[in-house]
Amino acid sequence: MDKLIELASTLVSGAFIAVLAAWLTNHSRNRQEQQNEIGALRVQADAMTVAVAELQGAAAANRLLWEGPAERARSFLLATLAYIGGAAQARIAGGSDGQSVLVGMGQAAELLSRDHRASKQNAATVREPLTRVATAAATLMRSPDEAVAASTEQLLNACSDIENTERLEAAMEAFGQAVRAATAPRLSWWARHRAAPAE
Image 1 (cartoon, rainbow, N blue to C red):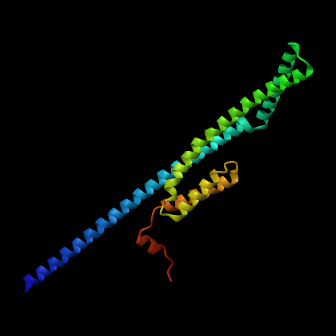
Image 2 (cartoon, rainbow, N blue to C red):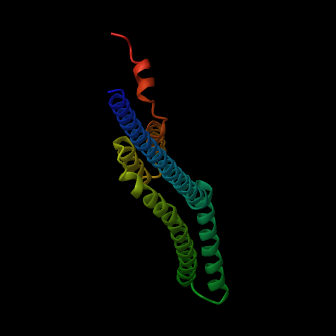
Image 3 (tube, rainbow, N blue to C red):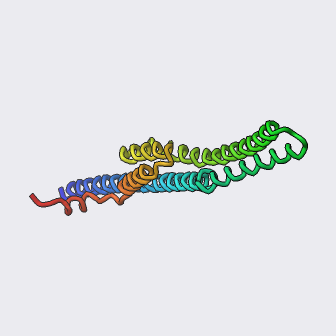
């Protein structure tokens, strides 16, 4: 009888150890997968943040170089000088007043056309950072965390109107909060149980 009890005890302890080992293995694997997902989310969020910063920089440079009051004044001054120079050149060559005006206007129009073309080419430099934003957003919008997916979509929409800095900043803040919440360390059952208020 003692041998039977000893055998039953060995079987029960072996089964308990096997169940415990299986539970620990599953728990460890789940924890590792969770850590991998959090790490991947952080990398994707960083890529999104960098892409938005590049887009903001490209838009600011475009504004500074081509859209500011100083740049408009420069364009006006150059067009005026081109008009005067063209008109004077036509007058020196023996043209009438009407011909001088037409040549001057043609010179000014040519200069403004080149300036406008250069402005458009510079504006196209915003396309590449915008593409990077869309690429970074694509993965984040498929995130299982609904707050991350929604805030990414909100940020992507804000990037389409890059001149609205208040909207973009609010979208960046919401995105940052969602990512911080999604990547915050998960409390264990025991820690959640201890933190719960006693009823």
